[in-house]
View 1 (cartoon, rainbow, N blue to C red):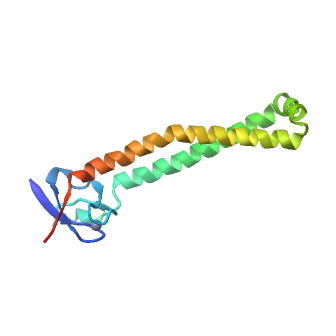
View 2: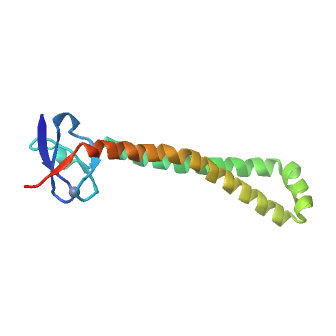
View 3: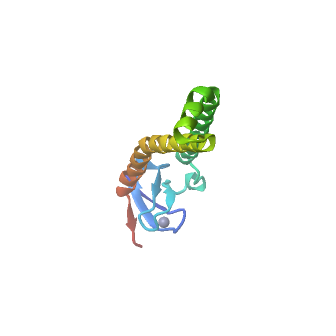
Amino acid sequence: MLVKCNCNNCSAHLEFESGRAGAVIACPKCGIETTLYIPGNGAGQKPQTASQIRKGKLKLGLIVAACTMFLGLAALLIINWKSIILPLSRTFGGTVVAVFMMILAVLVLIWAVLWIIFPVFVYYQLNELIVSGGTKVVES
Ligand SMILES: [Zn+2]
């Protein structure tokens, strides 16, 4: 059954399959996220859905993971100071240069890991586009 609701942001009339009520989509008219709801049941009054909260948690988890990874690598570096920094300082001609090179290497490593995680995010965004693709703006 097709039902109509209004975009939470621009009030555009959206038509969608009633089974998708509660889904968060990018509004086809204004592009801002909106929650599909069946008019009259009050679901539209809760624009922050579980999906949005989950996404926020995912972001926080990533930041925590990156920080933990950085701290872990820093700890590993300090523990193995003699076996890593000392030979490096001999190679690069100074402890400061050696430490700088190690920080650079760690940053590159984090960057590389982020690039592995990045496609997962793209996939996530793509899913949303596919979901919103089935919704059309009804001119009234
Ligand atoms: Zn809109």
